[in-house]
Amino acid sequence: MSTRRIRGAAATAALAAAVTACSAPGSGGPGDAKAAGSVVIGVASEPDTLSPLLGYGKDGNSKIFDGLLAHDADLKLKPALAAALPEITDGGRTYTYTLRDGVEFSDGEPLTADDVVYTYRTVLDPKTNNTFKSELDAVKEVRASGDDKVVFTLKYPYAPFAARTVLPVVPEHVAGKQDPNTGSFNTKPVGTGPYVLSTWSKGEKLTFKANPHYWGGKPKVRTFTMAVIADDDVRATRLRSGDLGGAVLPPNLAATFKGDDAKRTYEARSYDFRAVTLPTAHQVTGDRAIRRALDAAVDRRAMVDKILDGAGRPAYGPLPVDDPAFTEDIERAKDLGKAGRILDEAGWKPGEDGIRAKDGKRASFSLLYPSGDKVRQDHALAYASDAKKAGIEVKVESATWEVIEPRMKDTAVLAGFGSTGDPDFGLYTLLHSSLAGDGFNNMARYDNPAVDRALDTGRRSQDPAARKAAYDTLQRALVQDPGYTFLTHIDHLYVLADRWDGLTTQLEPHEHGFASGPWWNIEDWQPKQ
Image (cartoon, rainbow, N blue to C red; front, side, top):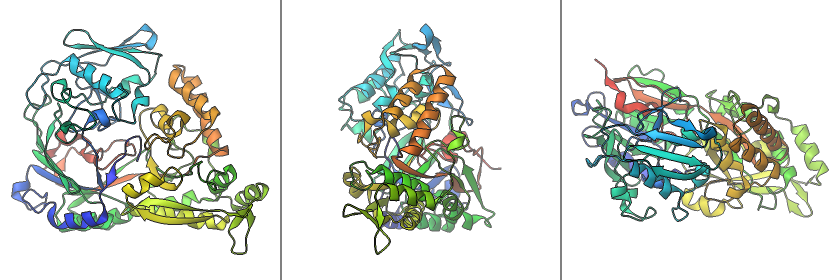
């Protein structure tokens, strides 16, 4: 989960899908001649919607849509629907984009500036039910200037604004005739991307075929299928049997393919972190001393070594240690002695069973994790074990997202977040008090005025030094007043049949599998000779 939730199918549905999802020709098996131009990839989850107006593809890499700009392999911005990078004037308050000539939507209708204007205005409309409006807070106005120019006027200079314009553009002539929240466009999208959605069997698979109107040329991969398989073990089994051409896998299962010469493993560095939300509404997790003690008690290095098999890094906050904005002096090791002193000073005293209590209240709370996610399960169990050594009882429970969502206001969740591109992209929605309880934004309902001020400064300042200082202040504040226990930053692992050239990985956000992976540029793959 991040600013946009991706919901996993239930494990039982995944087991059923193991029998049916990809039994048809074109399964991606290396020996299947009919699959020469096809790929089937096993992913853990599917989107709730395929509409960018509700968040789909907002960070780029949608195969159905394009934004004005796109990211290359190194995450540098490049033109997509725009013919060039934007012209920036008025001290960073005006961005002008000129559209590429000859672009058509998959229904054959031409792209115009009005489509871009419609997309952004609808996203910003209070009646549109998305949770990422705050990411476009800087936009004061968007207007067309003729058929081929779009002008954004900002309320204030927003340093990373251009990167926000990877947001996919939708056709006004289709989406504009529908309610953006409930219309059929959510499941039957029309875009300008290299592929179109062919079929979507909810909880089972999504199949895409090459877009005959694509402005970037005809892809060599003519069709690809995302098989939705929530259970990690089932994905690995189906990949091993040849039923899948590739899969997203946790480290322990990816390692089992090391001796398979017909498979290749791809490792992507990421901003994706695992953390425990500590809701302020709960009588235990709402106590700052409990949160600080948990931060001190957790053994992050052991989680990286034992759970991730080294495929990751300890998370001392929401930014990874190799991010330019990371504050180096916040790195900290497990310290049970410190955890004990914090709890003692706050009046949490050990009971006969070793669990602390204060004013008759036990230091005990539940921790939910999504069913079928072995990596989150292992993090949750390790976290509970570390907490118990400090005298805090953490009761680990698995559940579907349908069960978790109503409870996450006052129940801890083993969650995942992380965005690439700029510190503002991931931190504002994670921590700003104005977004507390707004869907999956600020799940912990964290409220710290110093952090809010730092977020606002980082968002509105164009001075790199002032922004760096603001994010330093924020990261140090999170150590003293944590709303989450940050655990690990995870490397993403993908195993694919070695049949294609051109596969690469990017530095990835939390959202991966369906949204990212070596298939981020699948339209550029070439079959091996």
